Amino acid sequence: MSDQEVSNKQVALKNYVTGFPKESDMQIITTDTIRLRVPEGTKDAVLVKNLYLSCDPYMRERMSASDGGFPPFELGKPLIGYGVAKILDSTHPNYKKGDLAWGYTGWEEYSLIVSPQILFKIEHTDVPLSYYTGILGMPGMTAYAGFYEICTPKKGEFVYISAASGAVGQIVGQFAKLSGCYVVGSAGSKEKYNLEKREGVHDLTHIVFKEIRMQGFLAGSYYHLYPKFLEMALPYLKQGKIVYVEDIAEGLESGPASLLSIFTGKNVGKKLVVVAPE
Image (tube, rainbow, N blue to C red):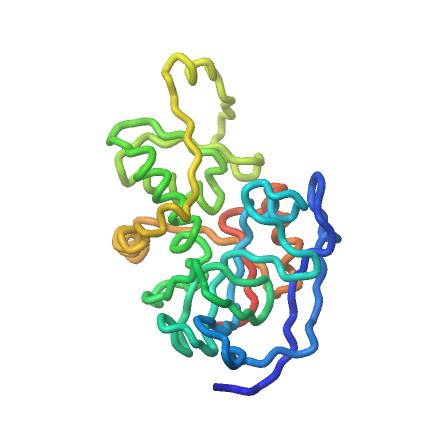
């Protein structure tokens, strides 16, 4: 174990948000010091160095004072989200020093995670680690569960995907093509639209007459299928049958602007922040 003490830069919530969030609702702060070990007597905990942080739409809900399904962030405390991290110290039986993992962590350089609920060890490092914020992480599981477990597609069916160039949409589109479906996607800005002839959405009344079903779900309810998902997705990635577009920002200081960019359609692909080199 290391008794090294270092400063810890964080992206913290400054104000609870009503309406559209602003960069000024967040702030970059630096703690005095953090010891790079799990505090003595703390069981089932890991101390991690964060490498990549994921910018996800659900985080906007946690920036509000009210609990709309996800508990709000604490003012003056780091944002919490999905990320990729290296374990520096552990008192948890499932993790050891040097392990790489993805899951819930703080928007900061170093995080102490006690009794982690969502933290998956990374066993496959022959793909970019950043993919575990996207196609091999929560967005990938969202695409997999939504498409295969809920939609249960059949070859030849028509599949429509909104936000088709985003973190989840780009995966669903490729899953659908691999399943032999006809795919139509929409995007939030003309820069992401590549057809010469622009076409709108017509005949929305067919939603009623064709009895189209809408179903919400949480990716976390399907995490027990993660090994099955990896078994399918990894070969496709390595064979080049699935490609994944990332929109990468450098440095924790870019965190606030990066998070806001996904609400204005400025990102192309999965938006993530690099905190530290691997």
